[in-house]
Image (cartoon, rainbow, N blue to C red; front, side, top):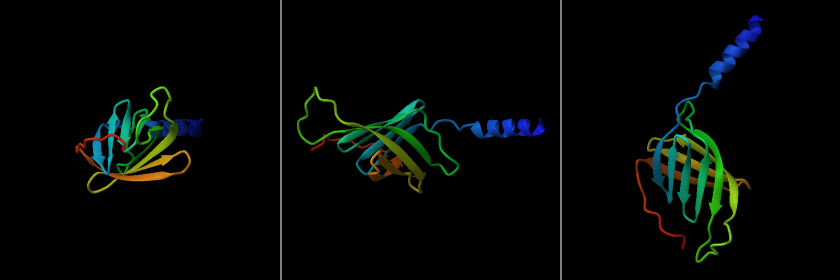
Length: 126
């Protein structure tokens, strides 16, 4: 009985989560916006959502899942939905902000260096 109580107490302690990360980071052709309910990532020719709140780990980084919508240059058929793919976001804290890696479901990875509080104007995909 004592060991079951200890397991329940340890499990409860490990399930305690930090408050969600909230803010905006930009740089390297991309912007990451995190809210209490999830997030949005916008880059050249693509945009993604983060499914659910994001909490930082002990080192200030995070890992989250989402979905990425890919666009192509030039005119696009408004009636044809763009491809949507599963994506994983992996971030680690750096001296100037976040080093973010965006991994598509096929294993393709894209790296970005993002700074907090900085805003960039997005131009259409050319």
